[in-house]
Length: 460
Ligand code: BES
Ligand code: MN
Ligand code: ZN
Image (tube, rainbow, N blue to C red; front, side, top):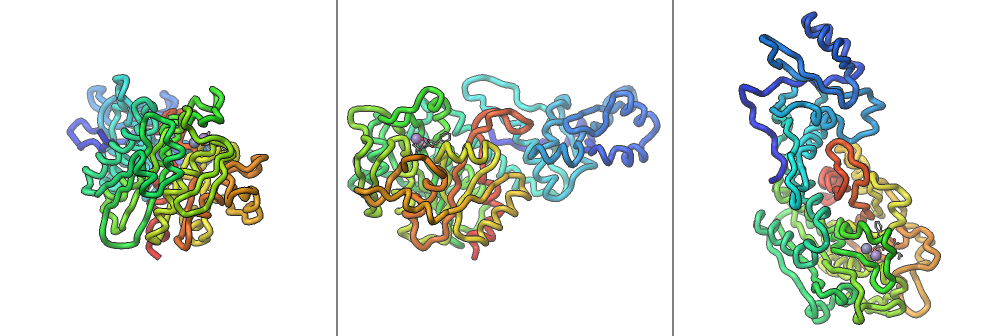
């Protein structure tokens, strides 16, 4: 079930969200009994503090949630969810607190705090529920939350239950829900239809590789989202060690993120011609696996020397990007858990992105800050182009030395895009440390920032 706001009932409690700096002012307008109660309970408006206040007959009359200081808040995307987790079951109606975009972000956080990955284990979901505050666009926030919940659930599902066929089924479900059309090219048909690198990466798995192609909307700017759908990444013959393989069910995080973003776009009914392309494969080990040193000819015609079978993401994305580029959409966005180098450079909280378009970059940075979905621009540094040019082929998928690994991967992808405006995200897709509204596990990165920036990105 997608996260929803609660209905207002007779039992709904008024909630005052109070920051450290605002407590004195708020207390000034309260009865002495309330002031005494708040002081006796040590409520200071600290981040994550929660307190019920009694009214007639000792029954709770209102709730307080601490909003911390500005410096406390700067350390978290969502603050209110932290206090909400400590409130008893029931519904709450915000009467005092943040406004505008800050309030919308906190509402999104509260909805996400109620979401659980419960496919394999029954778990109580968040029981303190929020009534949609007046003035916020509740439908929009629910659309964002449903998209984010989809991203998390897809990533969290283990690879045994989320192979290429199951990822396709998830895309079909989504298409059915919103009247989108969907087509796939599977197995040897990938060769007949000229997707040689998707086939080469996926052919060693008994679970057939495929290209998923979803379309929705028939008016407005054209936006093509391309997501890396490596359902499990063993590394291939260049096998990953156990430590490197442990989390590789998340290697379809780019696919999950573009599906979640597509869900947001479709639920909001945006005037876009949307296309979602997902090369869905398992990078497996078998006698027919691609080998180090093999030279592949890509859909675009560029030859690629496979110097590491573990640099598989850029191979499958290259054929999908070439297809995307053939119809010259207004904007192409790729999202991929592409390199370990990106994770080393910026860690799990920031979504690094690349684009040549300064206007698009500024729009993304601005949107990211306002919707609490942080991004960081990285350079398509031209002097590194030579690093991806080997002796015997046009391109090298894994430059020796590993300098600037995220940049060289991005430069590789850019070779497959022509004139279209292009934005590439090298995301991590996983939250290693639980905080309020952000449990350990799969997580969306960049989707809400892109959504908020879309008017500036695709509409020009
Ligand atoms: N899926 C991995 C990248 C990855 C690893 C993302 C860990 C997030 C966390 C990708 O397919 C990969 O293995 N990349 C290699 C490329 C290298 C061989 C050039 C990497 O980054 O080590
Ligand atoms: Mn890999
Ligand atoms: Zn991978």
